[in-house]
Length: 353
Image 1: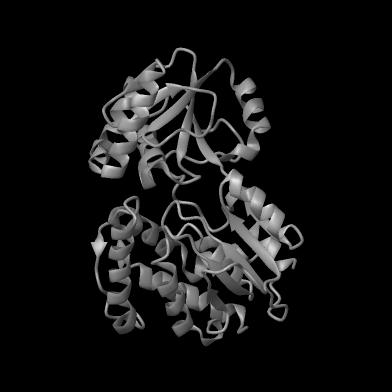
Image 2: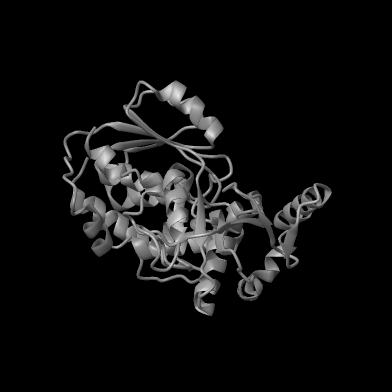
């Protein structure tokens, strides 16, 4: 299926195309290839995505596009793949079952399959079905070898050699049952956490607001839980969150806020809240929309042990110089190409088939 350098150039070209769609606005660049065919069509699909799914605001969809535009260039792609041995002759068909919680959430799996020389059979989530097909078409224009390599289906997956499936803990049980005899990566629910010490700078807490509120907190990389010292004062935390106050103007978010607040109050839980975010002391990791759980720690050593024991429930740990493999404040929604979901190296899996 073509050669690796050509595929890298095609993805780099796609990154160039996506660079026209950023959080600062949509601006056409006449020097970009195939714009006459794809620019207006993709712009229309962005609008359709946000009309179809109330969580996919135009701002969030553009944030996702901008993130991929920044990642997809020849330097990043070459650096990412430099540690792997990619054999272009061993082509397999890989089924991908995508989640639909945030825009283009399955795109990393999609590019991983294609860039390693395999064919992809994609079953999209009905919540996120507008963007990927047109990006796939763009790739097929950029490199003809992709023409026979990309198939979308709404039916049951058939005629594949391996599977990458992402879903809830519940659907993962079905995936394991149906796909157990195939080589597979099956992803379950995960959440991200932040460790606070009370010494965070204003800039760090402002970054944490992005980690919490981007994509309305619906991503597995969204921070849904805080670990705080025994005597933590939330005043500076709430001050830093204030820049997201307008999130409550989103109807779906506001409905969740009102509903979850009513549930908490009827259950007589103690809550801290500011009109658009609730904080509840809770040992769980997955907090409902518009709320964040928190838990107090006595010592960092005990906390590290707990997080280590609970590693399978955690995607990212936000901290500043406290723990191995931590993510900096404000960076959870800006993963690099080598930041694999659930810590499972997708490229290694695909190159070993």
